[in-house]
Image (cartoon, rainbow, N blue to C red; front, side):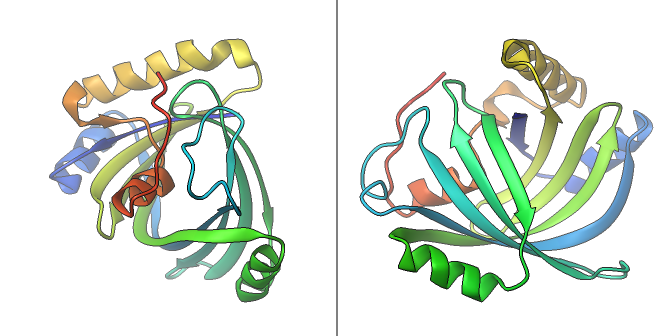
Length: 192
């Protein structure tokens, strides 16, 4: 299970400098093209716990040994915003994977493009993202095995963001797919 919290940021360079002063290590900047799919009929109703999306992600990294890769990801909502059941596997042909999903009664909801600078700080994954049409964000994530760790892990991430000087009003617990979906008119249940 993945616990993630993101926050809007105006100055990614200042945030990165602060993270590096706290011991963060950053790698390459990677380009992501994420295409989101929902089962037909679920694309027009509000979502809630147990509902899921499938995402096809194409990654392009400049300068890495494996500059391109493609992934199919299942992400199911839990009762807590920012906490996902997630399963992921590599795929060889993203266009054919999209054809399979659309031929299996899944509907393409949206595609978003982002540039992600990937890093870590302690046991957190830390990403600085520039998402087309949504803006700039920091995303902090941590994988957990025990469902009982959700709230404590999310509280740790929120405290970490506050140490960076992130204001609570900039905190965003929804995923990029949901943010883009809402921008396009899709409805979601309000969860805590």
